[in-house]
Image 1 (cartoon, rainbow over the protein chains, first blue to last red):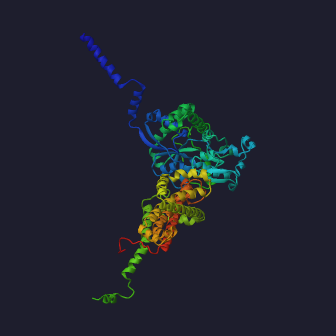
Image 2 (cartoon, each protein chain N blue to C red):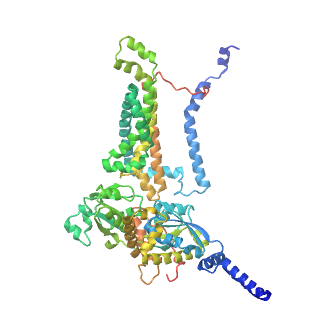
Image 3 (cartoon, rainbow over the protein chains, first blue to last red):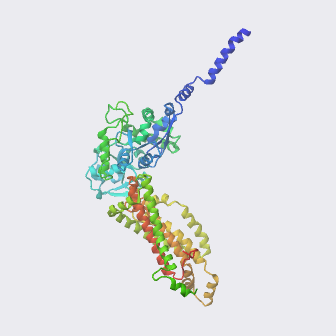
Length: 350
Length: 275
């Protein structure tokens, strides 16, 4: 009996010890977390409020993917890309996500910034026009003539980047701006559209399902279809922060890419995760479905304009074309120095 | 020593104490303002504050001069909204004050509503005014009226109700009618308070015009501030703010000057007779 106990007791001790430390994947995560030390905490100022654009970040956050990469990003909502640029520029946030035109405008105004990835490789801006102000023939056209804007009222959200895209579009297409009535409205302009106070707005076309859900049938002019090639959102920071956080940026881009790829394939799951952070998205079944429809419209924005290039890579031709919008829109009188305005060094294969 | 001896001792042309005090009082505000501006300029230079965070006064002044063709028409738009809103708000405020002063029942009914109206944030209801009144000047005027009428109604009502009842009884005893009592006693008595309300109201009128322009305008200094902020043009934003300050100060001084004209019997005395 004593010999039996002498054999069994050590074995029992080993079994109990293994159970205490755990044999499940969660403990592997814990042990791998403890091996990378304390995750690096940094602030990421988003371009707007928490909505469908932010699904990949919060999905990755929720699944612990950033933490597994030893990152602890603090995502913060914003009131718009311009505000994000200001906050990153004055050091109140470590990095930001903002419309590329806002980043470039910041550079033109002397703010020291550098982009390290473009999220939306395609121009997401469109003019959303109420079908009720168009003739049946105009409604039926696949690519309506741009002068159908004449005599219409444009609801301008002047604090937003789509306003810059619109002004550049007017210039590029040689439209007579005096024949289009412009009134300033609060973002996002849905109430003014729904009540017929304005005839069209310039915004991301992804929000069209939301407006149509409010009972406003729309005709959508994607500005890219009229030759306005420009980047949408970019990741950026100050050169000083980028120089000291290269590894953080590489890992952040890698995890975010993984999240974008996953949620693009599983939109329902992605949007449902965001509900934890913004309950109005799942306020009811209709709201959830509308948000999923909106989210799916962001998917085509991610693939690189050059199919052989990976996600986030910045092409200098398109970068310069985006900068030119500032000139066309009359925002700047001359282009900023673009020589160090972006870097691809954190993305392999660019 | 006799006073005449003292007087004879002062050299000819030497200013009196009163004259010196008068000069100091006249230039003190300007000197203080100049010191603040200099301190601001030095702070921006020495602390290397970037223009998009806080432009220096010299940069702002240069911008006002350079962008004057853009700033002037927008200034006139805001001025127009301010004056119209102030006029209507003051009239409504005074009429409400009359109702409150002459009827305790109306006072009990109206006062809570008037106070409640001030708790509503104007920036939140401004978009609704666009829906109700469209995109013209009227939504901005309505916001201005909402801000202006409150100080006018409160101060005017207090002034009208604070007349010595013995004076009213005296006039009644000589068969004065209500209109005569109003013109001879209540109104002159209430004028200083009415004017105090108007001075507060004119400053708020500028704020109201700007708030109204933030939603639904395509002209005006408020619109220009919003536009400048969206373009990261902090200098233009500050240039617009500077002009708003100038408008506010000039209008305040104008109302104060009119007040002094219509109430010559009333003089404000400071607690410190020395300065």
